[in-house]
Length: 142
Image 1: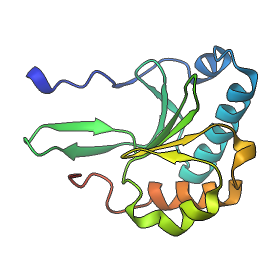
Image 2 (image 1 turned 90 degrees about the horizontal axis):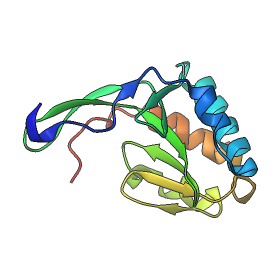
Image 3 (image 1 turned 180 degrees about the horizontal axis):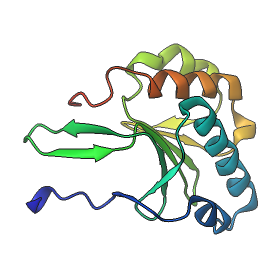
């Protein structure tokens, strides 16, 4: 793969063992709840991607330089600062949902939530469903 080798790849690490290792109790509970929601919506079994990301499904993408790789369709990671959800098609299509979601921050394709108590879970479910099923996943992002 040369210089474009992905460091974060799907592996056979135990998702439940990873979740059990999260030391912050509320972050652990939130991560377990979102994992269950994602599993229910996607119909996929959770899989570890790297050491700290739980992903569901996968797709093959191609970046601008022509490198092809495999990545999760949707995922999450219980980080120290927040619960990070990976919304792989970004947020352009979801302005109205984000306005209804509650307290959060976004990056290019990351949704940062401090606590599930801060957000509307039904809106989160809709966002997860739409993102997972989006035909724009895998398109070259600018």
